[in-house]
Amino acid sequence: MNEQTEYWFTIADYDIETARVMLLGGRYLYVGFMCHQVIEKALKGIIARDLIEGVMPPKIHHLLKLAELAGLYNVMSSEQQAFIKKLNPLNVTARYPQYKEAIASGLNAKVCGEFLTGTEELLCWIKQQL
Image (tube, rainbow, N blue to C red; front, side, top):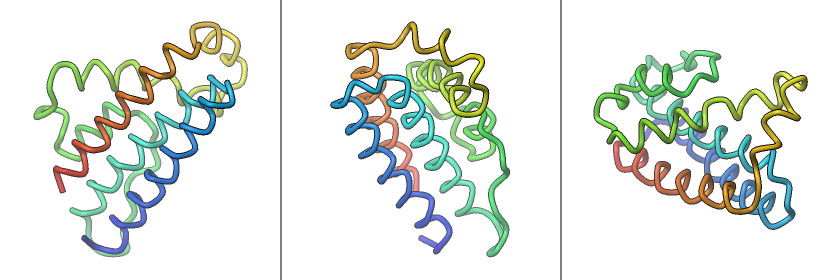
């Protein structure tokens, strides 16, 4: 694993821990945001693996596009594809606060627990693709 790939996966692992803490604290909006961040960073880790040294993955946050760039979208199960489609809008919370209330209204302990479990499973699968 190259240094840049290791960097992305290290921060993905940190972010999954942050998501767990946010769930315990009832900070549901940020559970969703951190789950998005975990998958974004893991996908960027895969992309970094295939780039010329010193070149950074694209500065985008769209999980489907990142999965395609990583060469993983077409090998994901339909459940994995559906999951990243659910996670994708959760990035909006930090970038566009005007959507915060609408997104937060659909988040609770059960939903966020499912997001966290799905994120852990998908992160594991992405790591296996290395």
